[in-house]
View 1 (cartoon, rainbow, N blue to C red):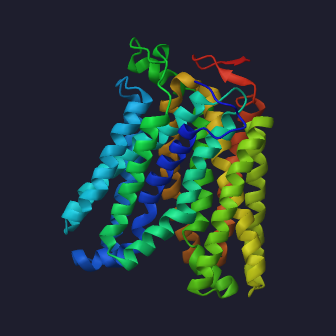
View 2 (view 1 turned 90 degrees about the horizontal axis):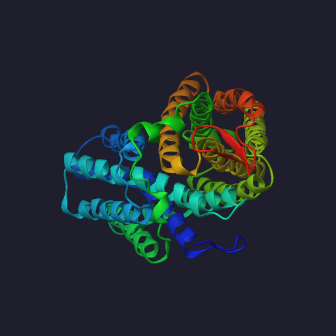
Length: 409
């Protein structure tokens, strides 16, 4: 079942909604952390580990799910895991202890670890020829939309009602995606599910130097972004003296920039080599970070200039993932798409943890060093990717032959 590349098929929008739901659920707890701490009578440093546990569970579970020879069609897998995801969030209404919350976060993360890679793999498999980048970017728009709309909405709901209502909101998002997917996502063709595949067959496309390089690049690129993003509030306060209300407006600018960057990246990937797009947006990211580092020296800086730079930074940061995903799929092939996207998702969470550590280390020396550290990580990612680009792992007309090699189409 194929659709015109100029349209946005309903099943593609449902995949974006699924991504929106799991990404919102990942970050939504940050806005209600004080209220949770008060309920469970633990310090925020302890309840904050609910976020860490979610991320670690996701990072470990995503590749395990993908490599298990379950042979379940994508639509059935997505509907099943979104059901579990919604139930785990609704069940928060029934608990009031930290341990119970911890268990529910693990369950939600186990489900999310299958949802997002499967959604990206489905978008890749169903994309019309030469429009894979645009379809992947549409799913990624769900992630940027979560930062722009989902997390603020969840925080607002928690403030108006109760922190538990925030999780119920995430659960409803998951169920909405489930209902839309059940009605719109095309059934996989019979020949796409190979009952004779062994674990070795599923792992083999991932066992090569190019895939390893892409995973390392992913972790470093994400680390560069998160090194800055984690400490964006104190940095902007020191740079332009922004108040919490102004910070909220600046974060909206970041979200808008991210949406524009994601969409632009998808269109560029369909016209040019993903490796070239990655190099371009990485350089823009580095330029924005260097500009922030230099401006820190001559602070205070007008808020308007800060808003412009933040929008550019966010657009470049969110333009990176579709290009890396396209390179990953070009190397592993569509038959290993689920495995590739799962392993790739794990590297994203590893990068997020690394970014927090590097950013925190830079902050301890001097807050103005945070954007410089972010730029350094991004440049390192680009330096690792350059040899892979020269070896032609990611041309727009190249696809894997399923056995680790490339063929021209």
